[in-house]
Length: 357
Ligand SMILES: NC(=O)C1=CN([C@@H]2O[C@H](COP(=O)(O)OP(=O)(O)OC[C@H]3O[C@@H](n4cnc5c(N)ncnc54)[C@H](OP(=O)(O)O)[C@@H]3O)[C@@H](O)[C@H]2O)C=CC1
Ligand SMILES: Nc1nc(O)c(N)c(N[C@@H]2O[C@H](COP(=O)(O)O)[C@@H](O)[C@H]2O)n1
Image (tube, rainbow, N blue to C red; front, side, top):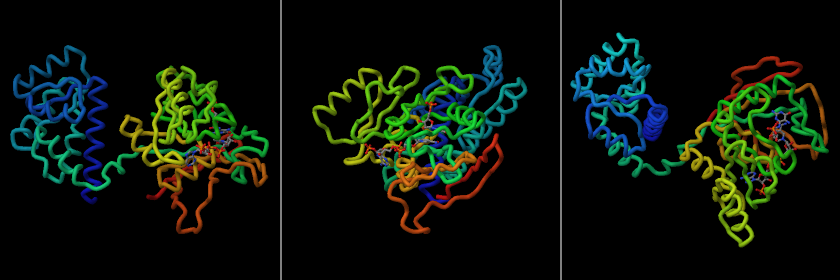
């Protein structure tokens, strides 16, 4: 693992700590300076200083409060290791789970360079500053999913896209629940007017992912269903402005929609992914269509593929296919895939691939 990859792993670990701390899991650290360093990295939540109160007392108090899990983040020196051993024993004796994976990851990825928690902020910022294009590495995990015919079509020439079986749609909606965002191009909005919520399986509103629409010229109709209040929506458009565009952006914002501007003629997909990652959208389900799918493959932004192949043939050179756009010129230029899983579902087949980066 090179230095850049190690740093990316450390930043990912910090993100995981942030998520768990926001969820209410207490973070066990040694002192105030550790808390400052973690706060500088955007981690907020409940910090408990293990150097101030005997550890058995802390464990008793948290047990009484009904806490089931804590995050262990003591230093990596002799004293920190001693605290860690005591915490593991006292907490586990009381049935409280001690998450020490994140501490171990920080130690592993810093290759022993990181000595304590108070220096973690300086450690990361020093390295991020000197690392060229480090931001480029902070990208969401993107799963591309489609229902396609045996001849690779996503819809008929007259835009009939009823391809997936009932159980396949349920599978897709379970997948929608697992992700932070669901991404489509403006072509799909104009042709299907989709809802892009979880509505084929039981779900509560907070399980709806954020709907993200890539729309360079802001063609989205103000009546589009993705603009309703069922879930949050982000519209990604280009930077150049005009009075008309600015007015539409103002209207969208007043409806609670987030607008991200990136790229000149077309939305810059890499910048968009980077921005979404920074906004906490770490896992995205890409639901096409073929033009956006090509753009995402071309920029190497897709990590996984899941397709349902239906026993149908639509034909038609103008019918949309899984991947359209201008296409890859040579086999070498095209994405490299590895089949990870396959199974029969209803009358079709599910194929799952990893994209080799
Ligand atoms: N069976 C299935 O699983 C699915 C079927 N479909 C079907 O696919 C069809 C729609 O596909 P399609 O018309 O290709 O539409 P897309 O949803 O792929 O949207 C394409 C549009 O996205 C915009 N865009 C902005 N920036 C980029 C970029 N960097 N790269 C690529 N696109 C960009 C472009 O419009 P602009 O320049 O104006 O921004 C482009 O025309 C429909 O028939 C729909 O039913 C769709 C999804 C799933
Ligand atoms: N997985 C899958 N199978 C099909 O047969 C499809 N036609 C699609 N279409 C995608 O799902 C969107 C519709 O979503 P809502 O039900 O309105 O929430 C559609 O716009 C395509 O992105 N997908």
